[in-house]
Length: 137
Image (cartoon, rainbow, N blue to C red; front, side):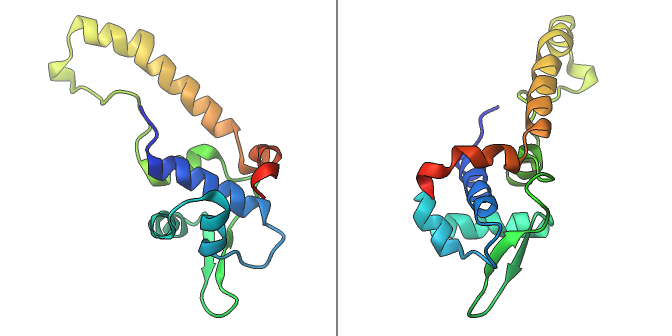
């Protein structure tokens, strides 16, 4: 599995949003500027994140976005599943097409990698990432 630009930028933007959690609402333009990400790119990602209930949007003169949950409750897995979909490193082969070797690889390698990846992403929250962002603030 390779995390796309959408996933990488989305994670950066969500960490930025968590950094500014004490602000009222944060504009996408300010996130885009701080993170050097295209505003159009962020608009698409934030639309999906809002639909998933991870962020709250507010329109108007003081509009912008804020986290829908505390940073301690939003995991990197939650964000990446919204932005990337399935996080498995290889597609699932239908049972009828599976060979003894592909089954062996699936059970002894792919499933173990998927589980490790899921464990890391489930355990890592936005709060965990807040110590990393001081130089981009």
